[in-house]
Amino acid sequence: MNFKTLGEFIIDKQKDFPGSSGDLSRILSAIRLASKIVSQQVNKAGLARHILGGAGSENIQGEAQQKLDVYADERFIEALNNRGNVCGIGSEENDDFIELNKEGKYIILMDPLDGSSNIDVNVSIGTIFSVFKRVSNVGDSVELKDFLQPGTEQVAAGYVLYGSSTMMVYTTGNGVNGFTYDPGIGVFFLSHPDMTFPKKSKIYSMNEGNVKRSSKGVQDYINYCQEIDKSTNRPHTGRYIGSLVADFHRNLIKGGIYMYPATDKSPKGKLRLLYECNPLAFLTEQAGGKASDGKERIMEIKPTELHQRVPYFVGNTSMVEKAEEFIAKEN
Ligand code: AHM
Ligand code: MG
Image (cartoon, rainbow, N blue to C red; front, side):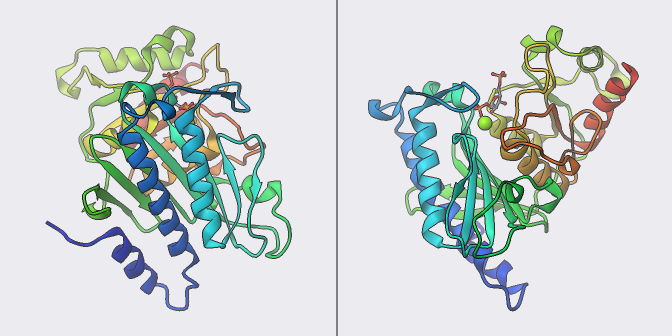
């Protein structure tokens, strides 16, 4: 067993940048702390009635908030606020961004608990986060422009998966590393160093109930995935949990593509550029994969609003490019 802990790993990496302020290390430590607290609640969710079910409120997108959504949102905000070096947080659960310490240099965008529909049924859920440097001046109030930066400007991104075990996977732009949580001693250990998408990939993940609501290119690609052709090892294997973090994590380890295309019901797709798509796109590129909206690189999209949605195709480069090929043909 590798006994390197997440805490040691963060400090080791900081040493690679002599003179660094340690701010980013403190942010990652805050995320680690909040994720332990959330993990503990998630693990006893079936027992603790007071944290199961709806919170009786809706987020700005009109989606019912779960009690655990709100709980996770509060814990992450508290933990990040305590470190004092974050000037603002944009969260999928809050209508507007929140200002924290004006002296902070960093802003955070996050989906504190993704996969809401799976919370009450004991299926994997996750937290997704992304870290940027502010563009406004330190000491001033944080501004919308700090949050509307393209994904190429991310300095760190990652997720926490609350699955059969809890894992934190993150990048600071120098590869992707995964850490598994041992709840007995409260420590994350480096379990998945240097994660990359495997060369061979076979899995396609999409809510197939939406196929007929999608464009012809997407329908043709799904048909392609299901076709029998020995020479290209088809049909592919369908796997869909309905929790982006869990579907993404499985595909990162086993090889595959995750898709949430535009549909006639959600013409811009369902997933949010800032809280879900950009962070996973950064991880994907660092792991040798590709993330696009079907045409353009996700990380180059210039955001225009906080809760912006975007069609999403992410995973092994070869599979994403094949999907793009079918989408290009439809025009
Ligand atoms: P959420 O942020 O409200 O949880 O929505 C995002 C989730 C993703 O985790 C998942 O991939 C997708 O929505 C599932 O949507 P659908 O139920 O339409 O397939
Ligand atoms: Mg979400």
